[in-house]
Amino acid sequence: MSTQETFISHLVELRQRLIRAFTVVIVLFFGLFFWASDIYDLLAYPMIKVLPEGTKMIATGVITPFLVPVKVTMLVAFVIALPYVLYQVWAFVAPGLYQHEKKLVFPLVIGSTTLFLIGMAFCYFVVFGAVFNFVYSWAPKSITVAPDIEQYLSFAITMFMVFGITFEVPMVVIILVYMGICTVQQLRQIRPYFIVGAFIVAAVVTPPDVLSQILLAVPLCILYELGIIVANILVKPGGRAPLAADQSEP
Image (tube, rainbow, N blue to C red; front, side, top):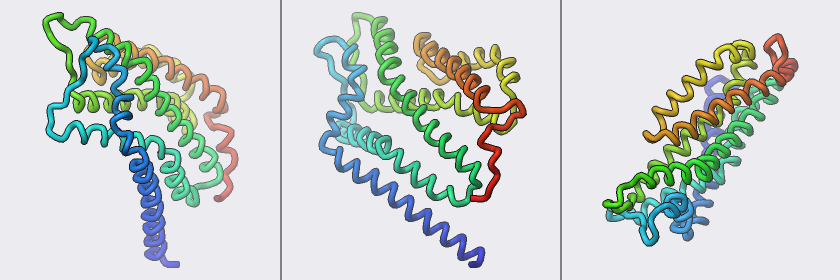
């Protein structure tokens, strides 16, 4: 088979796998569509429970009351379908990997996905409640707190992404050590700089309140330590993990 034919066959396979992944997301979306309002209410619950009794969120756009719940439902469908989507990605790239690479990539995909979802859960169940309580406890009695649903969705997505990415720190640390870019000892030596950097990053990417910054910076530091511990267990003193020993072809 010529190079051009091989390239075309890869494109055809990629197209098929993308269609499969997209189809699953769409099917899940339509399956959840009739509960779109309830799904948004669930997303908004951390905000609603701290608002004054009888107060509701507002929608300033003409089609916002319909469009925002639909967006949330699509995001939920994608999150539910994420394992299948990642499987399609894995099935596409796996034939071109060496055996030791397959052993490394698959745990990394599963681990990074799990950590990202844990970060989102931590944001929803811990951060939202703490931050909203803190912020609205300082609201003047002379104003009526009524957040816009579109702005709340934008805020929630941003925070989910921030905390999801933050919880990837252990995987980044493990990969750096595995690839020999740095050693566990070097990571321990730069710990003070990382702690300072964590608080700087938290101050930049979170809302301008001390509580949300602490709730991001502290887990970031803990996850950094966790990554060092796991890397120290998995990676040999020479800088190579046991998985790298098998260099056989796929």
